[in-house]
Length: 274
Ligand code: PLP
Picture 1 (cartoon, rainbow, N blue to C red):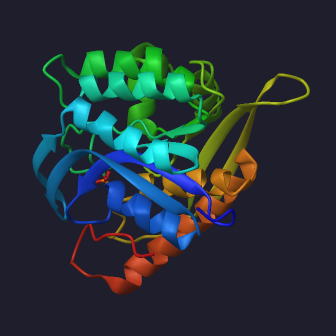
Picture 2 (picture 1 turned 120 degrees about the horizontal axis):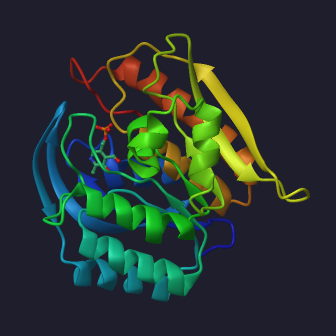
Picture 3 (picture 1 turned 90 degrees about the vertical axis):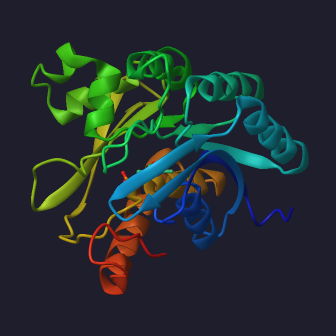
């Protein structure tokens, strides 16, 4: 692989509507000049606004794909999206621990359409507990939306009227290097603000930086979370600092949202366009 084309390994679910999931990851990395190796954890059947079916891959097949990619490509950064079930989450956590690679973890638990994307007979609480105890501490960055943040923080904290800045700090204190709390689902009609909590290199203090963009009123935003996390992973693979990568990713996402509005491929819940 050329020195000039860094590699991201994305481990995520397939979205047949191609706005979110591994399709979003590959498009994003490609558009940003980064090569994406792609490990499929689950196949989903989706049309705009609805998830019709979810078919998780066996964890052993997920691991085979990871080993195949890692044995041949100089992977710089790993990006996790939908994992599909607990067995795969466990196998992936074990891989991250062994490889010690930087990891951007999007804790994908539910689709905007409501479907549970980490369905497991053990129940959502076990999946959330596994993320909190085993995956989050391995992350360079986690990128929860507001709903995922309240699942990770637990109801008492999420309902305690903590500011978004404080919630971002609480998320970082779960043990990851940094946490980006995404404000896309906030009630602010003017701005979409994400809060990055990270440890300052010199003081060791937990700092928070806000990243704002004008809120675009569009019915087409399917795949925003996957696209933002992939764009950050791509920026990190290219050698940007975390804060530079978040700023560049936010900028990239804004453009894909504007393109989606122009494309208007379907009446509602259309895919981002790269
Ligand atoms: N489908 C897959 C495979 C995903 O990975 C995700 C999000 O990460 C979604 C759907 C959810 O996308 P949205 O929340 O935009 O519906």
